[in-house]
Length: 82
Image 1 (cartoon, rainbow, N blue to C red):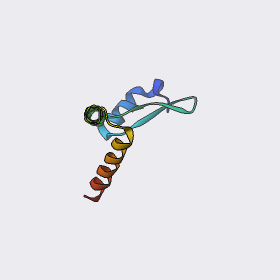
Image 2 (cartoon, rainbow, N blue to C red; image 1 turned 90 degrees about the horizontal axis):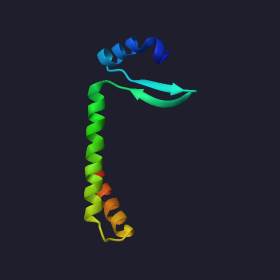
Image 3 (cartoon, rainbow, N blue to C red; image 1 turned 30 degrees about the horizontal axis):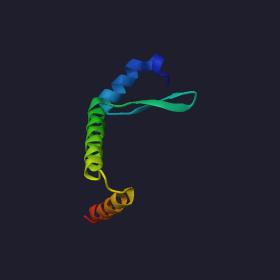
């Protein structure tokens, strides 16, 4: 199905069936169409990731990368045990 010829139908599938559509160009994925609820969740997760990344960089400012990596690895192990 081509996007140009079937945009209205694709939008209906995405909106009413919470479907996702992968758009390709020359057989390679270049974009995706998702319903707005999923898009909002992705955007929130992206913003939270950016916030946490900034917080970590500030917390470990002046520390060696080895110390930061060791502490992060320990935290990941602890979180996975929960």
